[in-house]
Structures are given as C-alpha cells and as structure tokens.
Image (cartoon, rainbow, N blue to C red; front, side):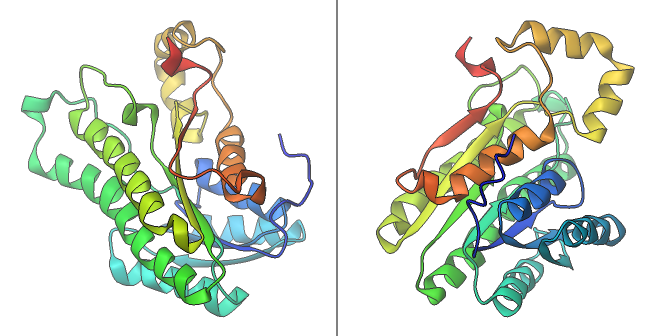
Length: 257
C-alpha cells in the first residue's frame, strides 16, 4: 500500500479506463501521491463520481468521456491534461476488455476486432498522442501500459486476447527504445486477475475458478486492484527513473511457476 510520500507531486497524469477497477484505483493512488489527474472512460456517471472522490480527498482531477479506440477522443483527453495542468508528465494506458474464453477456430471477426481494437489500438492511440505531448512539453515523461500475464504466457483458449496483450508488450518495448534518449520512459505491467467488481462477481458464480487460481500462485490470494495501481504509480515515479522497456509482473508469482 502507499506510504503517502507524495512521489508524484507537481506532475500530471492521464489514466484511461478510470471509471472502475484498476483504473479508478489508479486515479486515487496517483492523486494521493500528489499528481493532478485526468480520467478517461466511456461511462460518464462513474467517471464523474471517481473524479469527485479524488477532489473530496484534496486532489486535483478532471475527466473526459471517451473511447480509447477513437483517435479524436484520445487527443481530447491529452489536450485536457495540457490545458488543465500545464502539460502531460505521465500516462497509464489501462483501458481494455477481457478474454471471452472462445477457442481460436470459433472466434468471430466481431470478437477479434473488439479485443484488438480496445487492447491494442487503444494503447497505440494513447502512445501516439501522449508521446507527442511529452515531446512538445520538453520535460520528458513516463508511460505505463497495462498488459497482462496473458502477454507473457498462453492458455488453451482466448487466442485473440493473448495476442493483444503480447502486442501491448511489443508496443511498450518499441516506444521505450525509440524515445528513451528523449527523456520518455515506457514500461508495461502484467497483472494477473485482480479483485475488481466484475471479477468478484464472476468468482461468486464460479468459486472453483478462484480456488484453482490460488493453487497456481505462490501468493495464493486474489490481489486488490489498488495493488496493481501501486505498481503503475511506482513505474511512473522518479523512483523508477532508470527503468524503461520492462514488463513488470504483478501476479503474486504466477508466471514463475
């Protein structure tokens, strides 16, 4: 959990998928560490509630409703950070959709397109506009992209999801190599299944799935979404100032077995 050491004071951050789960937790964590945050998601009511929660706790927050698959929406979110807080220092490209557990040969075009558009094109759009703003600002920056343990290992189903999350890691490494000399760090996190509302609801219907996951993990529990958000905040902070191009598993050791 956070030490409340304000490691992000004086910086601005854009967080996508910020209306719930890991993204909403990231909004709270980044703001608690001193960052001014711009929150982006598709659900305005939930997004506004998270922004208001940040403000009530003494933080600075703005929000913009948008879809990460649409370049114009991402451009508007980045512009909001620049206009509201004087620039963009950090970004957490967290928005994504989950796996559908569909065998590869039964995966239809619509399912494939949804997964690839949100999980890959969404990160691609984020990188394009976030990097441009950071270069224009002339003070560098840090970007963290949310991949998954599915970006590091494979399972018998969900081929499209696995391909998408591997692609996020590729984009992160490519951007790190391209912009490191210009002061921009780019990293990825690879979380396992965090205990968001959707996941907890699913586990309540399939308790055997949670037990199986725990048996496959050295730390046999389901992490809180905040634990994933803390990892993203650390990578964005100056404490990770010489860390770029890495993929940080946040999985309780799942990928070491």
